[in-house]
Length: 314
Image (cartoon, rainbow, N blue to C red; front, side):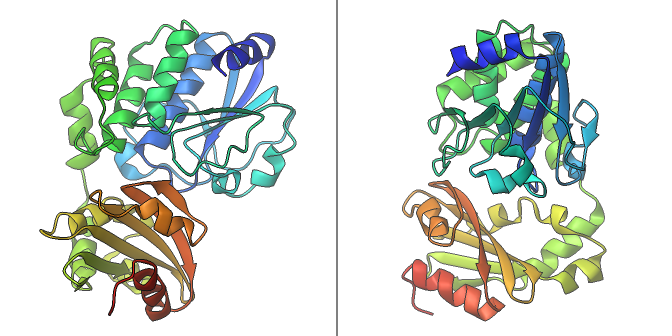
């Protein structure tokens, strides 16, 4: 696959690089790093993000970003960290007309939508795959690329704490530090740079916490909570991790209201339950210990469906 990608880049001139909606650190870091790499090879890279960059990742050095799907005939479209094409968001149907569609990802549930698929579910992150690809392409990894790749790997491994933290993940981080990434500054910007309103929201969310059979914990966030605390959906990033930290809990669930009959679900596990398998039942996906989906119905109906899928009695 790397050989095909190398030939594609060598023969092309104009590329589109994009990732999934509600982008996280891996999505943004990988996208920015790859765009910088293309530019270093003398190519034109257009970056499209369906959503604004979350505040905690605004410190990342990045190229110019478009938030409206650009029109034009690109030599190839690169879709990063995206398990399914529709996860690009608005305009995803336009991407299917691309002559070459390159899918670079690490999710277990990736549906191999590309004409070229560089998918490795053993990799800690898409950032790790991008690092390997850039080494293969003989790209000179400068500080801007290093900061982005380090952030991608660091955040998708939960600060190098999750089960997906492999020896190669440590090695990538080491190389990025050598290339100029500052670990302490990145950690501070990602985890210690939140506005007060985030904690007002967290307080409300934790008040909804309920446990089932002592092994499943659920909480939810509503539009009313956002309005009361002056926040929005990006402030929720990481909340499900607080729930997972409860002693004895094997599955943590956070439901976010999209409307009164649709909820976005973030699910985390500690290894005993394959949460990707559960989310896959609702058209979602992810990894064994981190996955997500959307569920239709009222909040109570959504909760009941999840507990039923988890075989938990209320």
